[in-house]
Image 1 (cartoon, protein in one colour):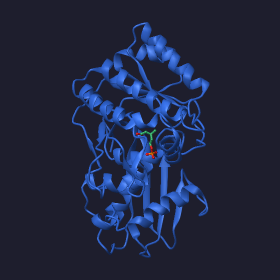
Image 2 (cartoon, protein in one colour):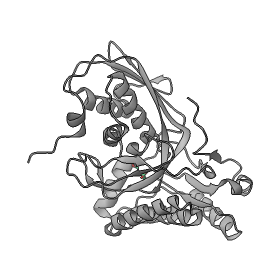
Image 3 (tube, rainbow, N blue to C red):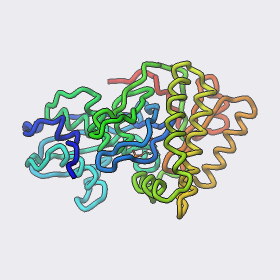
Image 4 (tube, protein in one colour):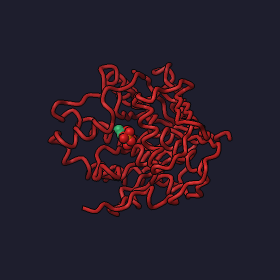
Length: 332
Ligand code: PMV
């Protein structure tokens, strides 16, 4: 069977120039309507569109320099070549180099805990993609960077921009239209809070988790259509700045995703009793009149969605939360 050309063959020149020193930052992102399941594993194509909000300064900073040999650092520590993280980074770099002998030194600093369902892979691959294209002097539009980053991790294609971003499912068999794009809506009062319940690395990666859910969960058949409808409805709520509608849809979407995992065989459980307690606290606050909603990814941490006016109540109920203002100016 012949495969369609992947994005690297399509978008990059056959021969790369010698690399130069380069760096890039990318924000992490949290999906308000989730990506959980692929229609093509080789090209990393999703079953449904998804929509996220970027986490402002929380994310990844990547610096690349030409080197005598490949080496990678994470938060200042040299990674052993046999580590899983090194393999992830250079597996992706190799897609760029396609066998060309261009050794690189890559250093990534995360301002968000790595691999705890706080989307460090999204910002990590987005920053790496941007830094690689700068290092190899490739003049590509952000839409092309989004397509390339998607191969590192699906959610990375949404981390090239700040604010609200939609990853369009796309239709083309080669994945060329499965890319993200920013929404134009700016919502300065929009706030997120991260309740860091457990920031150690998760036992089951998103890739494994969504594969297992799709293969074994009897509830999974319902998911892609629900998630697609939620994505469209959340976009409309963003555009209308209808916060209660946006929050209710995002919370319902996250719970539906976790329900598909819970029904997998064996069950896949990322949420802990502390996550459920936080959800109960959110519901209690809501019943007292505070417009706050929650979302959770492939990890136990809970992210709150609210508007600036509710900050006093949120800070009182969750004094340890990290508060994020996604539309605050971004320093250079
Ligand atoms: O991009 P991945 O492979 O890390 O998967 C992301 C999965 C979720 O975070 C649970 C949902 C999403 O859309 O970000």
